[in-house]
Image 1 (cartoon, chains in turn cyan, green):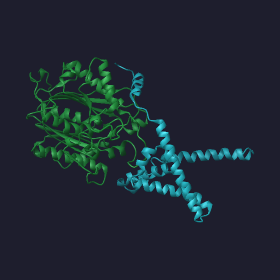
Image 2: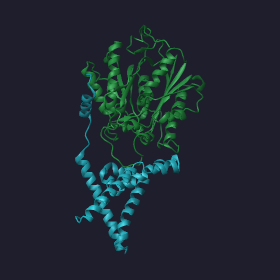
Image 3: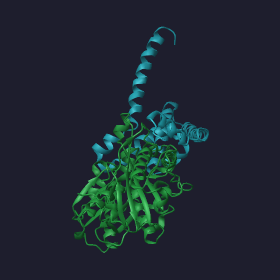
Image 4: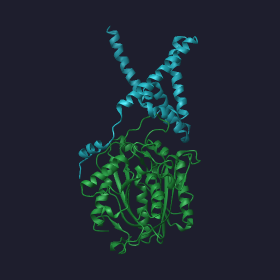
Length: 150
Length: 347
């Protein structure tokens, strides 16, 4: 049974268990939805407490990020994420976890070359390509806006 | 050496005179938990970093091995040791306290077999009187080096394996009452194009198949000669592939074949996906449960095939395929009748 790499890859794939996509989607939908409901609750609470709406719009994601960071520090976030998958990854909670987890992890390597340098090892690409994408969209928007389309 | 087949029959087979296995909590809670010598409830083993914890496991395993065998540090001529960390720091720091000549090895998860093989060859050929084989892996230090930060919230793929927190140390000596390492067969790197670092069982299986095929072809032995054929650690997928591919070429090993990655955790309750991995997996199983089975007579003759995935995070990111390697060690409770078959190796 001397398989060439291509045939072997197919053969190996036939042995690999598939991810339970439907279950994963359902879990992501549920947990993601719950996170959004919590955020909505926080939003309304801040409004109710008399905070100006402009500030509430900033304070709500800040609060969610703080909560996600706290849960990461307590070691609970990864347990929730294991169940939730994209449900915790896609909202801003995933971003908070992606920054805090390497920061905790690299503490032993010092504050400069450890925490400082490695903090953005996962979130870095999101910031880089997010910024680039927004610049490109800004240029497109400028022309569309000046052209009277938007 | 038997005519280019790379099967090395050791003329004066060394005896495994002592061994010790140290594991973490999850491994202790697995089906073989009671067969390990020592475990810690806290996987940091009282240290402040995961890397130091891994070294501490090696130090504990080696110390315990000396104590169990009533052997003095000065009686060990050399240590062959390795782990998964960059530059093998798990071993170099862990064994620093012992004033013994040290050879650092990197064989990925095949390190237990590689170190046993080298120690056996050195002792069997009279270079050393006693040599130790040591290895370790730690889930957290491996995650940090190869995957994501510990607290990162991600999902693992069904084919991924769980790095074992464990260390094993074994002492081979010229004189002893067995079990003996009678034959070894160094592995050849085999690469079949697998690029998925989350499916290392599939990447390593062709190497295990290659080594076993070569072994059965040139040793004259048949699978039925063995109480067990253990690979370490291919996990569920690699185990299936190895059994199937060998069956296709006429070697039916299904009855006595098991994999250390499948033995160490409970697939039902411990949520480890395709099974265990890491040097510490086959390391702790060989030095703990397997040696126990030799002592109580369950095993008299086994083949241990240590399998390693030869890759780094960098090589995977650059799109390089993962090569596998499989080193074979034959362990018997009795010495071969005809003094090693007359094909001994000279140093």
